[in-house]
Length: 275
Image (cartoon, rainbow, N blue to C red; front, side, top):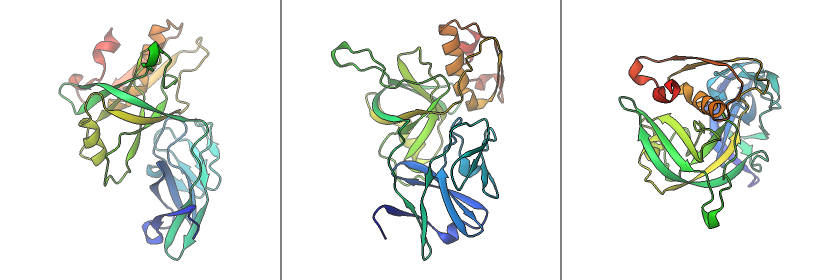
């Protein structure tokens, strides 16, 4: 078998009408079995980064569990919005019981850069932590942003030293900071997975590889139309970015946000939103 192909699963691992997320060269891929035929597309929804492999499969359509975007698993094309960009598709071969996927180049729409961890903050009374990374080139006083993004987008974080995590060594997170701030912030619940354990123990000054930005879950440009945000728990992260951006830029935009939590003490960024 050509070196361009890599084994990702066994046929018994993916039963008919089932899906499985795998990683190839750091890319999250959704492998699908439709009537014994195998297809593979990107597993990260191009809208806001929802996990397609955790969604539902009907025929040749996979539906994102977050906002119901749908994609054709044969081509990666969008069949139902709100997503408007297709998923990358991958060539699949079956050799005996081995499912193999052909390697391909990195996305042309995203770039990779190295960011340094500046600070870690734990939300009191919760298992939520925020991680701030420098977003400025410090060489020769260059203040150019290392990662240029829009409020609400997400990026992939390769923190290194992650082994045995069932979801792979790389994760994507919504960027909870605003483009008006000079740092990149991700905010997440710290669980017992190898990735989250490694993330929580990163020391200030550590450098990580970040690829992005991606996603179209951003503020609309017609400010005459109000925005209504619905969030629950950690799902408020893109709205922290958007509200901060709209406030700093003094956009003539009316925003109403409904945020659901188990208790007042678990409301993330409460002081910032109140302010």
